[in-house]
Image 1 (cartoon, rainbow, N blue to C red):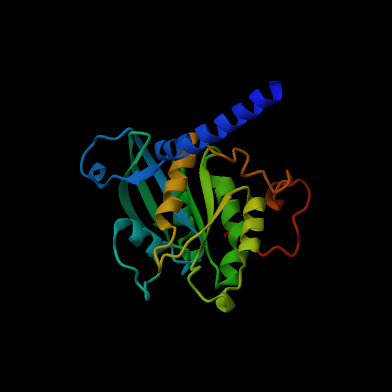
Image 2 (image 1 turned 90 degrees about the vertical axis):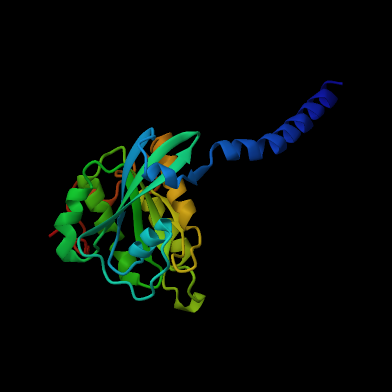
Length: 243
């Protein structure tokens, strides 16, 4: 009888989880609330950044959440660009400031100053550009030096709409790099508007819940520190430099 009762309890739990699952998901859902841009009825104001090499599609990610069309021939961002979008999470209004930073080296000093006060952001690379992937640790080093320890960062692979033969960075490589940097990993296509809203909603949820990787700046994957925070001499073959 005891076993039977236990089995019935198990079935009851499965039914309860199946029924409650969608409800719990909807409670944790983030949605856009454009009216918050016009009024002052909001509970939180989050400053967030889009960082990464030039021509990785950061500006088109910004355009998508603004509701603007994708621009195939978009020009590199000069310095910074900016938008404010309203969103709703657990019945609380949030104003999300999103700063699109220039990825060219000549704007690096400007970008560093924008880390101050940021709650987090997206570190973006282009899956068709190996160089943008190779430079991720340089960008992560800037975050470690200038961003708040409580800030939340997502590693985002853009341009996944391309043919597989044109992709030079695999999903497995991206996930491995995210583990090394201690960041959540997501893939998007600004061109096809795939997963764009969700990546921003995930960022908002992570900020609201508290940083899921509070030791991100020290986690080199499997508990090791990334090379820029390890004691002793730095690797001689590293191409990551601060100017």
